[in-house]
Picture 1 (cartoon, one colour):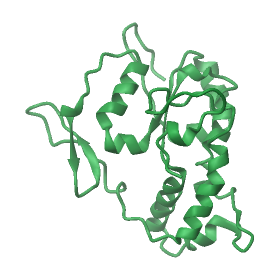
Picture 2: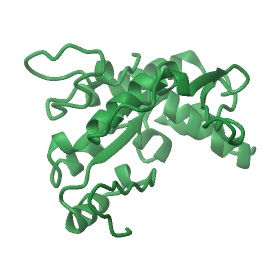
Picture 3: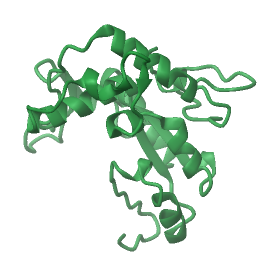
Picture 4: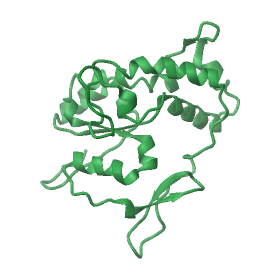
Length: 220
């Protein structure tokens, strides 16, 4: 990481950090005051999206349904498959909480980045202690891609939209398999250890366990 001067914020992104066991200790040893931003989405949709991306590169891979189960008859989910394992957010979070207080972690909803990008980025700006500069006027919705695009300053180049690898059409998945996955993820995402996630994400804080599915806008 480059040196950061007073008044500057240095940002770095690597999608695999959140699910890499060694990452929290290494980042903590570098800087215990690091603020962490994690973008997540409905774990079932995330798994299907992961599969869709792999399918585009390897069209001969087995079906999503066959990869999901160790034994479909018994309904045993194959948690060794990375597409499934990554979505067990509470499990990965436990590892990070060994090194960072929950107040240094912000979970951002991938769904709300699409439906309300300015609102979700407003939370990010607040978390980083920045003035809210990015607002609704900086976005427009691209109907072709199905995602919002970021407008650039007047006189600059074209607006920034997500690349070709984003917004692919997902294959049709057996709805029974989708429901089994939702049932599988639900208890993980309602664990007692998950005590924060998105305090201003539209869910009322209640005593006792926090439902991560509500906090992150996940649909079960």
